[in-house]
Image (tube, rainbow, N blue to C red):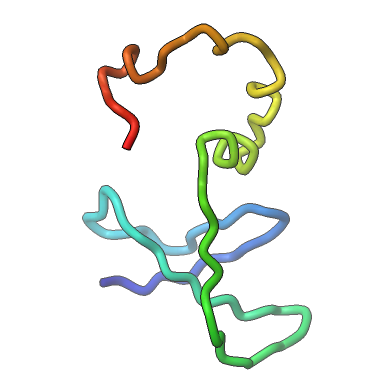
Length: 84
């Protein structure tokens, strides 16, 4: 386990330190709200179901889903994987 400092601004997270020898990880994020100077302890985590559409929107590629470009593509076949 590693702890790294990061900044969140306008929907983007910038790591201020590198993750050492990590190729894939699950992250637990503690948010210290700069504007409210909040020191409240989180009482629960909110689970969100993620989808590729949500992820594309998060990285600013929502326009990809506004086209018919991939409607007739079997992506599982293209990448030789089965959806879980």
